[in-house]
Length: 177
Image (cartoon, rainbow, N blue to C red):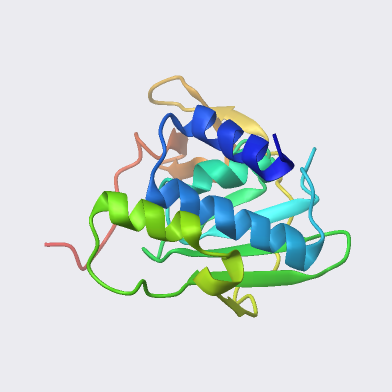
């Protein structure tokens, strides 16, 4: 079994089924690996900012080791099939944006179409528009004075002299009716 076939099978096993969306992420990763000389990230050497939370993100996790928990998979939700990849070691980055497909297709036709494409046919290569995100921070924790649950300092609000988590702190928005 060639290396790419084995990677595809790992992605399918992780995702749970084959689909066009998984194929899009898979091909984006293969292209990013080629363009930026990337390999599996044990920590935060490789960063991906995805502009969607669709199926393709699973391939990014499997192949590059980018995960939310490690802090090297971030979401900049724009509803686009676009992925920015960063190589911290070399300082290089690229934004891959899916090109429009040739027309209306069924799910099966879409899957077959994307499977048949080379990554360079599928994506426009653009410069990244988001600066390389800083490495993940560790935050002190505080106990919410209302619910008693421990919360990271970045998500604590001071209200009436009390430390409150976001769930317990009343929203303040003068424009909401």
